[in-house]
Length: 292
Image (cartoon, rainbow, N blue to C red):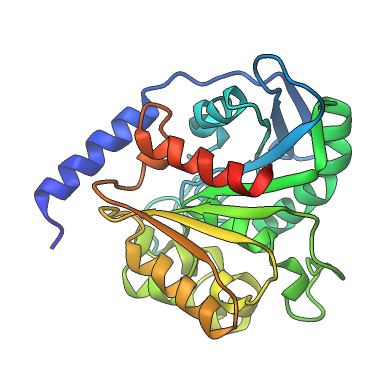
C-alpha cells in the first residue's frame, strides 16, 4: 500500500505543476489533417545571437485523451525563457470513453499514436524552418515527461525498430540527444508495477497484442540507439517509480550503451515540469548539456 504521506505529497506537487496558466504559443503549425496534428512553437525569449537549439517537447498523461499539450505549455515557455526554440507536439491519444472492461479512458491508440509522433518528428525540420527562423534544426533535443518520455525515447529509436515497421528510419534521426523525464521506459516493469493503471498494455491494444507489438513500442526493447540519452527521475515518484527508469538504464548497459540517470532526492513525478520547482532547472541544465 502506498504511503498516505507520499500520496499527499504527490497531490501537492501535481497541484503546483498544474496551477500555472497555459501559455499561448507564438506560432502553431499543422503536420497533418487531424485536429491533433499540430505543433505549437515558442520563440526564444530575450535577445539571441544567431540560431539556437530546438527542443521538442512531448507531453505525458498516460497517452489518454483528457491530457493534452496544454498542461505542459508553462514548461515549454520555461525552456523558451532559457533561450531555446521550443516545439510542443500534440498527437492522438486514447478514446475519451472507456473501452469495455477498462476503468476510465483508454491509453493511446494503436497505431495512430505512433503514426502521429513519427509524422510530427519527420515534419518538424520543415515546420520549424518556417515557423521559427531562430531554430537551429541541426541541434535538436527531444524531451518528454512520463508517457511523453516514452515517446521521446521511442522517437530516437526509430532506426532500430523491427524491419518492416512503417515507422522505421533507414538511418538514425538527426538529434543531439534525448532527455526523458520520469519516462515509462520499460513496459514490462511498468506493467508489473501497475503504472498508470496498465496504460502500457492499453497503448498496445490490450494483453492479446502484447507479445506481437512490444518489440515495436517498448524503449527497453529498442537498444542500443547510439543517440545520447539522459533520464531524469525523482526518487519519490509514485506515479512512474524509479524502478522503471533503472530497468531501462540496466537494459541499455546490457546492450553496450551508457544512459545517464539523474536521481533527484525529495522529488516526485510532477516537479520535473513545474517551472516553480528546482527540479525543472535541473531538467533545463540536462537539456543544455546536450543542445549547446
